[in-house]
Length: 113
Image (cartoon, rainbow, N blue to C red):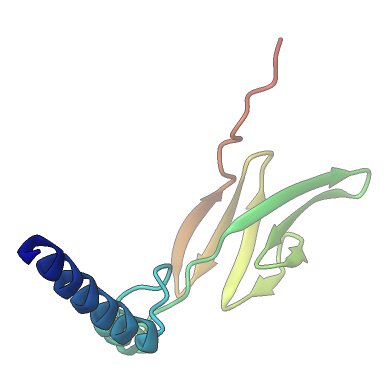
């Protein structure tokens, strides 16, 4: 009889804890609140967003690079960066007098031979 009352008490305590957590509406896919608020302040202090090379396109008119959703040619500018050269797997840019080589990500699957 005593075991049953202890089990019921534990079950009631568990239900109270779970109902308190349900009201909090936590999203497990989001970073902790203290971490995201600290990073958002640091990102706005003269930080330059990184540019990502998404694709290199080649046709009869030459090569073009897709960076940040924009298709660019040599000499074009995007987000404060100027395209200096476009290669098959990379693009050389200059931003704030600093040259940077953007590379395409390695493919997940390698083609078979």
